Length: 176
Length: 180
Image (cartoon, rainbow over all chains, first blue to last red; front, side, top):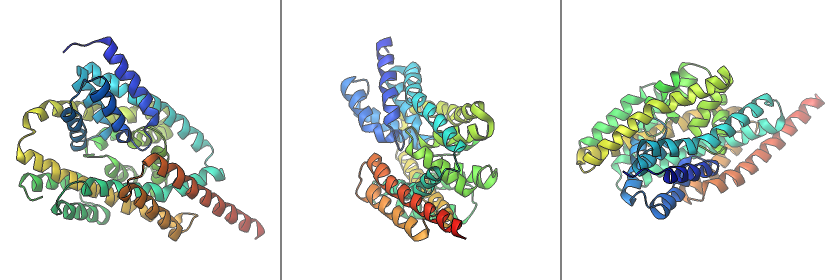
């Protein structure tokens, strides 16, 4: 692998900019990552790009790690460090500042209104994510699995890893 | 440390497990507080769950707590993901592996929806009232899930309307409180 500082810097710089655009999660700027990594820089193939997202979805931990997988496939461990640092640095700084500002002024009506107004929208986004994740996949049996998991999570205290494991088992047996 | 355990259990998204651990097990946050933190994490750029861990860590332990929470959230999963990347290239063609991924994906979608159902209970205390809250929720679902409008615009437009509405309701509540 031919590592160049130029490549690392351009990865870092690009993800630095994307960080502040990624409202609603880094997955929303994935199309732009595709444009740069597969198109402009040519460091990833299409298949590698898609696999990066699939792997991070399947693995434990925040899905943002797909960014590190892309960096890794493009330029090894240093690439993973460059993309991950780039995507995290601006957004974390901003999040900390806003959180402190908002918490110090939590009695302000505007701050309360923001929280009350956003609450149903955030909940709806969770339903939307569930919908998009299942409706994208052809077939119907996995939808039953999704509904069963949703009911079990909201009505019982069953361990979530148990549910995931069961889903993996059912899938490995070829039932979904 | 709590965030490491939390992240490790979060296949396909950590949101469901974060709600269970932070609200139901450790009781650091109420259902309403979790929803607030999530709302802020959602409108800010960056991965929402990382924003949530930063903010919760910061609120309880200052900026050191914030970075401990974030590092806990990211470190071990990062190693696992990179190992999986290496393995993946060898087993991608195996039908059992592909099937297991599909099954786990379906369950993790269910986990997110189930968590949404639980959090919806917190809307009962909304100053906008339950019916209006549900109406905003349905509008958002239609726009994002069915029409596939860009998330940024839905968040800003619908969010602005909802927040303005909530602001006016709060104003009305304060005015009626002052008369009594």
